[in-house]
Image: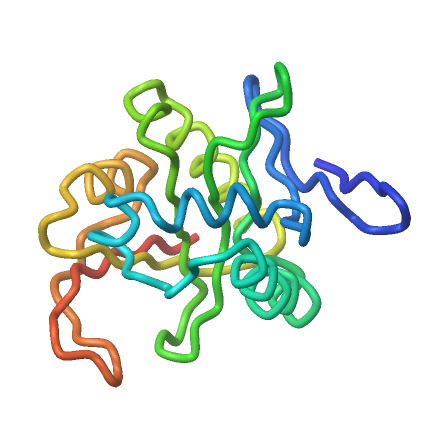
Length: 178
């Protein structure tokens, strides 16, 4: 699972049967804007306040790209091998509010129920283990049964409820140790 260079910037991180998972770039701003304004994103992840392509570009540069630079990982753009259409995000995140690295994912609703999230999340989890992470965690809203089921399917265990710092609502907490 080698990174390929395009214009000197590492892009491809993982490849599965049907997907390429690669670093996000500023050129992905229109897709990120669309995904983060999906009702499902807003309901289950939260409104990030992105309203313009420029907002999304800044979010990518200050979020994902900064995380790649600081940690060597982040949320990767998941795109179909066939046609290179972006369909979602999946990757590893280091949040200040969690001790461990967590796995996150979100896909456009048109690609739900087709196994893409499972395929991407399984590859990301295996990659995390390969690079030496000893534990990966995840959080979901109480009513996000689909994500909770996917986390269990890829091997994470339900560890109960937690409240993150500066939050008021509890979230479900999952973990896997290698």
